[in-house]
Image 1: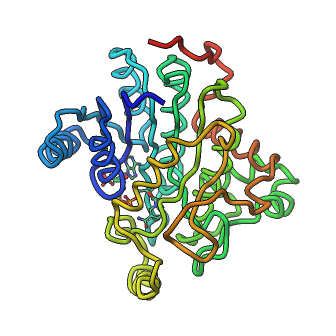
Image 2: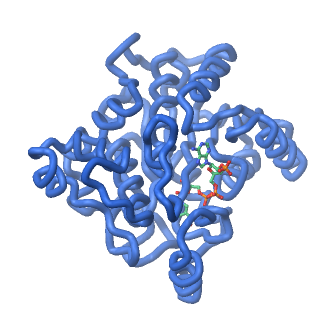
Length: 326
Ligand SMILES: NC(=O)c1ccc[n+]([C@@H]2O[C@H](COP(=O)([O-])OP(=O)(O)OC[C@H]3O[C@@H](n4cnc5c(N)ncnc54)[C@H](OP(=O)(O)O)[C@@H]3O)[C@@H](O)[C@H]2O)c1
């Protein structure tokens, strides 16, 4: 992949900031950095430029909860007309103690995927991803299970119990946190990252052959602001206890480096979810093999649910073909 233009979402703090910093250090020619408000992301771009001593950061306003903001960002990217080599869909959050929905009726921790889907499909339709582009989206270990206090939903069983076996309707209910969904913040987060992993697998089947997409858990990096909205037990019990165990936490830079590592992966592993070894939140990443992650019916149901909620699909409009090299 050419180290030319990268776009990183959610750069106003944490891992997005660290990733943008690392990309500059690796010689990327331009890094589009996004944030919910132009003023804040302009500040971020200026800070990054001063810390790295490189004038390569372009601020872009992008509020993923708001479809019109995604459309405006896309319009600005279309106007520029320069294809992106590395699309890093990092923005995300651990959900609030009290259930929060966006104006479009999407649960807050699910909303970044809906905005990221609108952005990615928009870029593909506009031929604004380079032929060998890499797309990386933030996943998290709870999607594979086995993380205390977090439990993902058994979607086939949930669909059978409440939606006559219709998994698309079941995933859509998780994205909207209803009907038939009891709000448990940590479980909503596990479901959001599970749906991310399934979306990646389904997107990989739809991408032009030179492109690759990966879900990557950055692992534990509690020095970011990720749990700012989380409940008391997670902030004051789970994380401090986990941090006492050697090898369960890492710096934001080390965590963000995983994204860059995945951007060099081949298309042979496109569509997979990479995370820490079982029982760990740091160290090397590996492809996750849990059967529920590889269930094709659930992957396709997740894709269709995201399409339904976002109102955007790849099959509409211009066919997706790889753009000729510049
Ligand atoms: N840190 C960890 O231990 C850990 C572990 C596994 C996975 N992750 C994942 O890593 C990613 C980055 O997290 P972090 O630790 O860097 O957290 P962070 O410090 O809270 O940064 C998150 C960034 O995403 C932005 N963001 C969130 N929702 C957004 C939305 N709807 N629209 C636009 N921007 C939005 C935030 O902007 P605002 O400041 O404006 O809200 C912020 O810039 C997340 O997807 C998270 O789930 C983190």
